Amino acid sequence: MKTDWRARLKAYHLQQGVYAGTDSEEYQQQHSAAMEKLRSNRGNTLKPEDFERHYDAIAEDYAKYLLDPEYVESISSAIKRIAEITEGQKIVRVHEAGCGAGLDVCFLAVHFPEIEFTASDISEGMLEIARRRADSLGIRNTRFLKVAHENLTPELLGGQVDLCFAIGALFYHSEEEFMTHMWGLTSVINPQGKLVLCTPGGEYLNALATVMWIFNCTFDGEIKDSDIVSPLGIGTFTKTSDSDAKTVAMRLALQSQERW
Image 1 (spheres, rainbow, N blue to C red):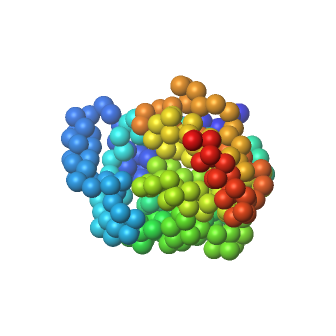
Image 2: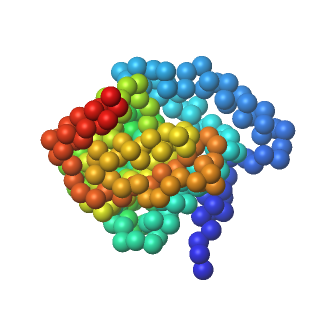
Image 3: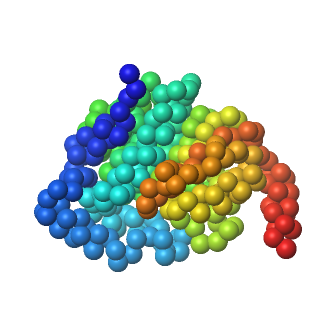
């Protein structure tokens, strides 16, 4: 029988106290209050050097934030896809880039205790909450690392992984910064391994399909309207081979020429 990942994730969100359903006026008031508290600076307007300080400062409030129903649906779609990949293939090691308070990686670690998980974030405040969450769930198959996307290496993770995912965790201010993030994420994946990105908007992900050509990844199918759940879209990629700096530079140059 097929696993109902959406039902499991909803139960987990309720158990972790980050989702209370949509039926009560009290929930709506709590959600509005939480949004207002975090709205002053959500992080995507910050300079790179300010991210760590910002997320350290809001970590406790962020961890208690009641998730918006539409966002929960988006996350459910992403986690469902990750879980199905994990369930259907020989996956030994998985990494989450930008794990925040550890909500998603802990859910997966509980359901796949035989898999070795690592998770990274730039905020020690967020990682501390993630470690507490893992401890409270009795998780022993997950390591948490303080490192930015662009500084990820296979050595830090103890070797390349079979699957890397990032959910709402790609903030960047320039194409160059985005490329360094992608270099970090793709460098830690085994050839034929998977990359799953859950990011704002379908147009963004369709652009990613072109960008991933630079990093020797194939886009696993078109993003269809049914796959785009506001506010996040989901894209999966398969890494075909490891890229070296020379290959990436050459493809970047070709891409620039095509623009002109």
